[in-house]
Image 1 (cartoon, one colour):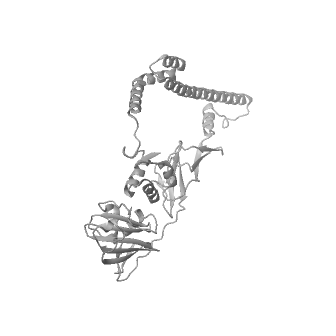
Image 2 (image 1 turned 90 degrees about the horizontal axis):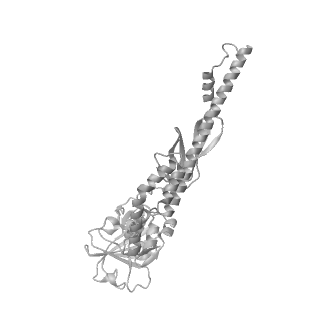
Image 3 (image 1 turned 45 degrees about the horizontal axis):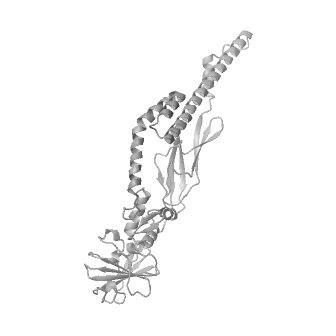
Length: 390
């Protein structure tokens, strides 16, 4: 739980329901905590990177806990050189290193136990590998000895001719050729296929299989194969990612199931005056979208800015980032242009009406939009076309 504006909120649960860059996630956080939409987007991005909100938004830790943590950290750092020395000694002669680290009272007991266990496992692994290598070399020497004895016996009996006679070197080459080697690798994908999914080493949906010369197969785990150039799935496209393992490559193709949105052709006519494609984040100001005093519907929202801009150019961006529902009616008071812009939704159209500003109308629903109508525009939601109505 994270405290934002004196409100405890579960950001982890929010990010499970939506992605960090989701407009819905930012809107939900804004509605729950009262922060602006821009602040909500920044909080979600920082939290996904591991950065908590500012200290006036998050419950502070006590000073005693912080000091104790710093003191413990310093003590661990002081004992770290000894721990490294003991670990190196345990890898060579584990009993001796284990005895010395256990007798050292300056090292934390929990750290001792962890280091002793890890070094023991690594020591046993190295010892097991050495035993297997010695066993393999012994079997190989035994096979060469038996092969040489057979050849010698056959030569004495006159069974083999000079052309059929095999030397130990020939048998050694045949033995190498008969070793089980990796022929190729294959891969399948059973993970998420939505747009934005990244195909990389950490994607658990990728399954890689190694095929060997004797016909056997073996699964290759995530930490063994490599994807040097991760690929991000794009709507309506099939992406190819190259997987490598022990010198073998496989090109895995994954089709994105997210359908690509068809671009709507722009309308023509003398009243079509442009496209609403500007971003409200480029405006130097914050759109609060506060409730309006004396509003009996509960759907009116008010924001104030001071910028020399025409809001019909920003209507699509405003609708995307600020509106929480199509039933809302928003007013934007611009103190620079002395105008009040009204934005409402009617099906596929954003009705953008520009009024002359009336002093104090931002504080009272009874005065809001009471000025003279200057211009009115229809902004089409399918492609942003702006049609001048009045």
